[in-house]
Amino acid sequence: KNRKSKKSETKLIIVLDTLGCDYSFLGDLFDETNKPEIIVINPLRAGGRPKDLRNETYDRILFGVFGGGADISPRNYGQEVHSSVNYNSDLDYYEIQWYDFFSSRNIPMVGICRGSQLLWALGGGKLFQDVNNHESDHTVFDPNMGKFYKVNSMHHQMVDSQFPPKGDIEILSIAAPKVSDSMVRKLANSWEISGTSVEVESWCIRSKNNKILGVQFHPEMGGKKDAFVNA
Image (tube, rainbow, N blue to C red; front, side, top):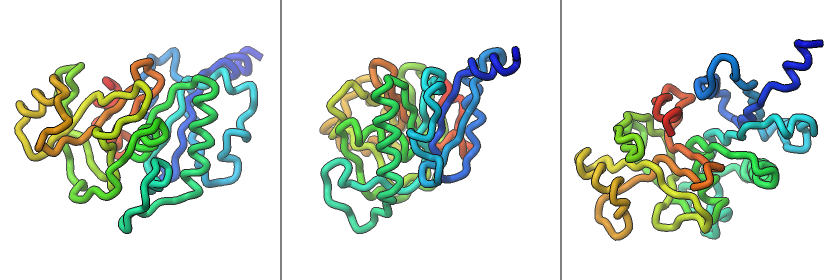
């Protein structure tokens, strides 16, 4: 009876994943006595919809995670589809259901790569539809921690900082692969990104009320996990 009661009180992290990745690193956010149960759901499979959750689990959800995957259809942010975009309309549809589910219950959301882009786009922002030469590590600067991190890069779309969401989502850390670390630090500290000729990439986004966090890299695919934990 005590074991059953303890199980029913355990907090949950709901992870939406279509790639079969390992999300156990999320447990590093908690001490040993408070580790939540991580439930990985494929939204494209049977049983992968918000309606399939039991009502009694709602209050136990700490946050939801949107993982990586296919491109997002530009129609979700009011643009025509570029010929290079390879999106999955079913994945878009079902993850939007999850976005609405989490939002309506004030449950925080975390996005990884595609997931971060999705949170940006559904908030009213726009994406770069076609990004090439992003298959190597990037150095990212986090001005809040005052640290540089080496993270992986394997994305085709990217947050467009010139067209942010309407709400309180902001860019937390950036990369500028073609300039020096000192210039990246200067750009990040001043946030004078608009109008610059420097190619700046947004690598971490966060809402001011801490309900949304998104990272462009993949901590679940050998990426820098401490960069995620610090974010």
